[in-house]
Image 1 (tube, rainbow, N blue to C red):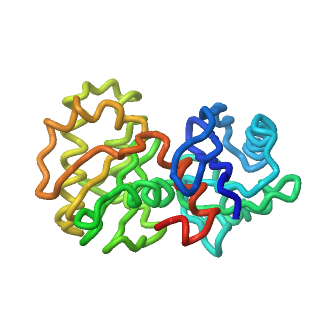
Image 2: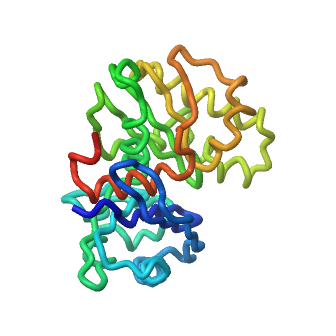
Length: 250
């Protein structure tokens, strides 16, 4: 397996890519970003994927983090922040170009894979709950370092609302919430997750993690809570690790 893999992180607002050294778990090029087309159909997004591949003049393995449930290695089962026509599509087959092998993975699962490698042995023990906050709420759960895939717990119903519609970054911006108002909603979500899963550690990733020091003092959890070390690069790194195979994920 090559030491370098192209990692792609697809989001509801942007599609990002960079070359990743999978042994070190670090970007070795600048991140390149293109706006997610609207409507976010498979055909339109396939064209953007081609642009990302062309930008890096890439012909090797590609790992792709996707905002939805991925079944049978590559088939999209949900796409709540993209076009509904994605459901049932074999994304690896659609994105394949120039013979490059494509490995698909849920976006939050990818971010979690990247972050779990950076924890010390004690932190990995028990339940680690990764939350990526952006256009949606992505979740990844690890038990003693082992991933439980495709959890999609950002769609938990709380007080009659889909949590993602209340506590995502998109909701904060669309509804003009102050950081304090938004943090109060996030607090309700985290408290609900604690009641259900009793995690030992929360990791907060996604674009909002850049403001972690601002909103973290407004949160109260029984579990330790900390920002994702790779911040908004975690999805790209984790996608690349998924393409590199299990040996590189640990």
